Image 1: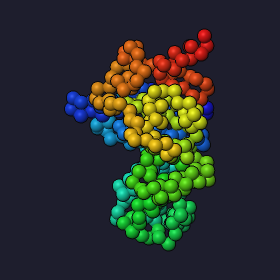
Image 2: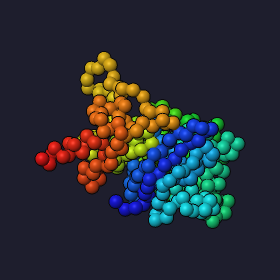
Image 3: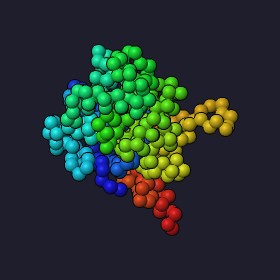
Length: 327
């Protein structure tokens, strides 16, 4: 894999008084050029915190990066000045947030908001920026004549299209989408996902798709990272993870999806609750909920077991299975 984006040993805490919330714990991750990575996990797993860390827009306080590197195109973003980071945000890395209502300024026209992003990063006149803003609106399926309208004049799905237009206005090489379809109904959700898929091909950009919906990942992504309690437990291609999930948590996620071809009186659930982020258990963070928990899982942190060049899992069970397979 090329080192387009590489996260090494990232640890992030939120501090409130004496409480320390362990949001991200020694996270390692890679995203290749032109690749779409699905970032999957339950609410509170640390997905959004990781994304905000990449852009260096974590609220500080209470958030604090304790350790780690974010290497983007060969440079560590944590070592850059704020001025250098401002040049990267929007132009090189852009983010689509999950709620378009809070992403748009209600007192500015949508055209002005796209123009603002373009003029921030590109040398052009107001007239040229307005022309480009109209082009971007048409790219996301909105008539350019609506550039002079305000956010409240658009539906939820149209607002999200405007947010995507703003994010893509400078053609960033990395797009981070934080559950971009959560607030939309199913029909509009499908349209937005189809739009994002088409735009990714058109602009040849890399993407991190943050979601808890495994269907969205199958539709859009090339690789998948399964996140739990602030760390990645399994990573691989969409085909590998969906065809042969190896971590008990990944398997439990798939088992909890209803099968439309079978009559089921009750849905399968994952026993227990995600750990309190102020008190992450020792050993494997999933061990209190794992049906295959062994004694060592309670005290030792499993290292990544590489099943092949692209698929790895942090689980002692996978190590045991691999050992038996070679005997």
